[in-house]
Length: 173
Image (cartoon, rainbow, N blue to C red; front, side, top):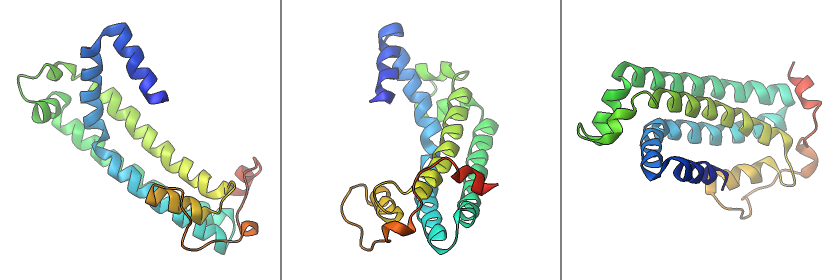
């Protein structure tokens, strides 16, 4: 819902053509989404399993490896997009006569924002694995991977899962 509010506000203030141009640039930026989605699934299950075997530091080290891989891959995507230039990327995807080719100045900003969002998603996935909530981390991983809230094939005892509290940040230091 919150993502739609921005698009509706943009449409009301500037018209539907601006929304279409924004979405055209967002489509190019979101080509890196499989990297983020895949690594978030790996981070969630790896961090939960590492926490079950050890402590929060071990869980963070396991997640940190995949976060660094994600940052590297997303940076590589961003660098390759920069080499092509914004105009080339827009023309390749939408055609030389497309009105979207004029939004070459907007594309780098949106690509950067999506890259930062991807990294924060990865860190947020670690936090989700570390805090536990009402279900175990494996249940949460199952929900993310399968896309529904059904029962997980196996369960971790509730006492083995770290519940959310602020001092967990101190344990990482």
